Length: 401
Image 1 (tube, one colour):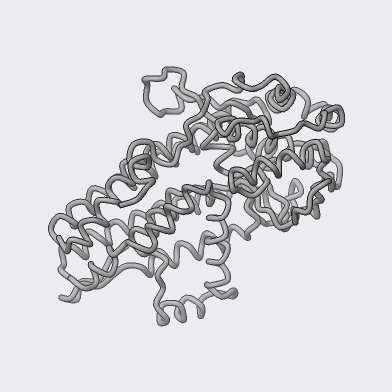
Image 2 (cartoon, one colour):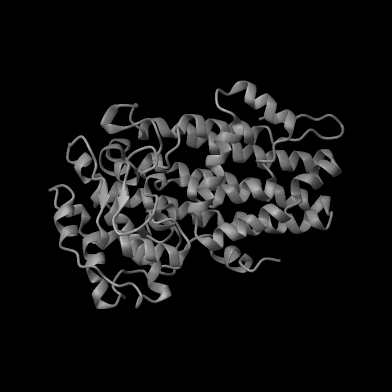
């Protein structure tokens, strides 16, 4: 059905990493060394000094399998360079990214078909290794390759997202099967697989919510969050030696994960009809479509194969339309159970965020998330849209979330 399907079923959206940053041609070692040394040079304000000493390096000899790690390292260095003054207590970030970072960063990003900024794929999907290669995807068996702070909290912030992505793999297998069953008009089997998928979504949520137990909110606010912010709504930045409109680039955010967008597309959660759209618009100070524009823009920050796969899912999934057409209580109940658990995931995330986000104005917080959105409005709207995806059965049974 899909070119990317078998890989997704086996590995999810996690990138096959090199497990180490050691397997590079020698001329690129400087990128690795600075990225790995950020926990030591950021606190003493020496990122700028190290970047100034960086040579201009040609990227043409980089093999394709080096690109992921190269973008991760350059992305980490770029974030640290721009935000170092703020972290050190100054009032303004740097506003020019030097050519020795900007040019190779843009070239490598173009080869990967991604925006030239640290994204979720860099910080999470490409930034992990297993202690025991045959062990499970748990935070106890996972470590990051690079961090800004060197703190265990940051390592676990990264690896809990890796564990979450691994937990989602079963959901991808179930979701693709659900699509096939909807196309075959097999209501009985579809209801079964949707109930299984609902349980998997709860497991994903449980893995994600362990963040509260292993990542200190204070450490995150003081030592991590600043470096994940993008330039959009935050800083007018120039990429020296390039023509990139850098100031429009969004920062790393979980909204760039493909996991929830996959579920939304399988289930048709974002398919608002005109009546639903009007009802939601009456409740919001900002039109829903304007907020959903941010939701769809985050897809542009995903790896190219992920974007193409999600688009194919969007075009081909008939799950929602078949459930509406069939209308049996058992099938509708199974569908709504999935939607309800997607809503539960978003609600849990929404409730967890405040303690990890300073009040607007504190610690140079503008009130925007790291991805450049007003996070309260954005996440609240996604919850509302998800809730509106519930379906009434033909015998009049209403969903109860």
